[in-house]
Image 1 (cartoon, rainbow over the protein chains, first blue to last red):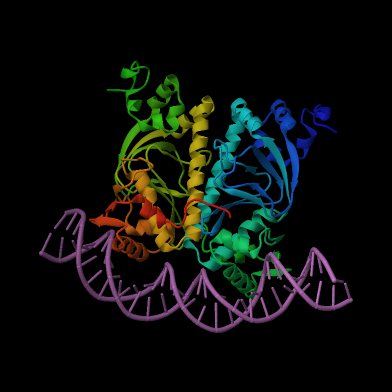
Image 2: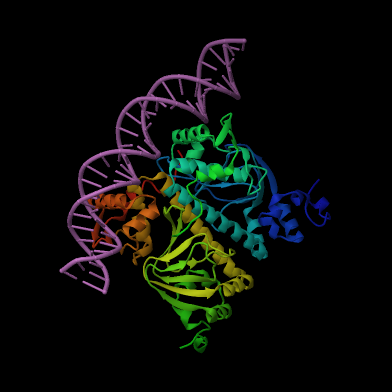
Amino acid sequence: MTVRQDIHTSGIPVLCLSCEARRRGVCGALDPDNLVGLAKTCSRRQIESGVELIGDAQAVDSYSNVLSGVVKLTKSLSDGRQQIVGLQFAPDFVGRPFKVESSINAEAVTAVTLCSFPRAAVERMMKKSPEFEHRLLKQTLNELDEAREWMVTLGRKTASEKVASFLLMIARNMDSSVDPAARSASFDLPLTRAEISDFLGITNETVTRQLTRLRADGVIRIENTRHVMVDSMSRLEQRCGGLGARQP
Amino acid sequence: MTVRQDIHTSGIPVLCLSCEARRRGVCGALDPDNLVGLAKTCSRRQIESGVELIGDAQAVDSYSNVLSGVVKLTKSLSDGRQQIVGLQFAPDFVGRPFKVESSINAEAVTAVTLCSFPRAAVERMMKKSPEFEHRLLKQTLNELDEAREWMVTLGRKTASEKVASFLLMIARNMDSSVDPAARSASFDLPLTRAEISDFLGITNETVTRQLTRLRADGVIRIENTRHVMVDSMSRLEQRCGGLGARQP
DNA sequence: CGGTTTGTTGACGATCGTCAATGCCAGTGG
DNA sequence: CCACTGGCATTGACGATCGTCAACAAACCG
């Protein structure tokens, strides 16, 4: 079942038929012709947890869409201190265009499915289809918004607000019943305690303590250290320190 | 001296002739024709320190290039805690495309010169000129890199490393002798102590104390609380906690 | 010159980091 | 099957860094 074989299915390659990147990701920009062109060069990859996708200061020779799983983006200082600067879920686009080498690390934190394209194919597509670049710009702007949101969390929230904010963000990305106004949520944490601490700029002991406190206060329940249940999302939100902004 | 009057100067509007945005900013993407089109709609504005350019949750009706001065981007929590999430220098582009309202505040922290365009004109230009959108994407990617760089600073550096990193960043953006490998630097801080603290996620007292310490250690000299001199940039860099990343 | 904003310095205390002990679980090999 | 190992999580004791509060100095502006 190759790609070419089925392009008459309304002109859309089979590989892409059920792909989320076509609905919400960068590929949504492409008309069937361009989609076929790009799909010819793509390859689906299964990555297991812990594998590095992009090494720091390593040449970037491919870009990918995340189809399932979670990828963490990290930066580290020379003495080993580390900071997670982004998490990518399906159908995010991974890779830094226009730079020969990346200044960040990308690593799978769960099992991950990728749809990878050679660098050249993506760059060709950017030149050929302004709509593609347009989508890329939109995603980049969203990532910028998210990064700035986390700057507030890192700089101005207490440890307990940080942990609550993290849980809220994960709940919104991981719970399949994604209603923005869902009253409850239930999900597996994609990160270890140590990784959560690298995300929030605190220690893993502090993460554990705050989780225990949230559990003691009845805001969350935890099973097997990884599975989290939130009965009342609004109670969790109250612990996040005031998300919006007002000026009195 | 209107705009139209001088377009035969190699086809470039007078207003744009000496504009940095044409060399390094988004306008560099435009051919003379498009430049003239955009220049017709633009207006130069002088803004004084402290004036708000974009209010939080306020409709965005114009975009601007910064021609001189410094603009701070902030986000705040409902209880008043505030975080600076970006600083923009010439020739940065200010404004968030594709969103009706902005989730951040923009405010002049020094006297600022802007070149402002109506929202519609910028959006027309984005449709018309893929090169323009391309530049915008590049700037956005750079801002994303910067934001992530600061996430490391906010999350993983000590107060003293934060202040040193801040001085280094300002030196690189404000000292006119911009040689990347300059041995020394001298500049006016564009921010008050309180603003620096909002940038670094610490208190203004801590900022003061770390500055006093850097001065006591001979790393910097300060005149009139605002003017900073760095004799040896490398000594300052050593205080930043290891900028690059290694994995052993 | 007052009055206001901004910066500096000190004393004290809370939050969070460090260090260490222990528990838990999965995998491995005898 | 069980002991052993190693990674991860939890908990406690202690201490350092940084925030809070307060007083005061300096700069700014009418």
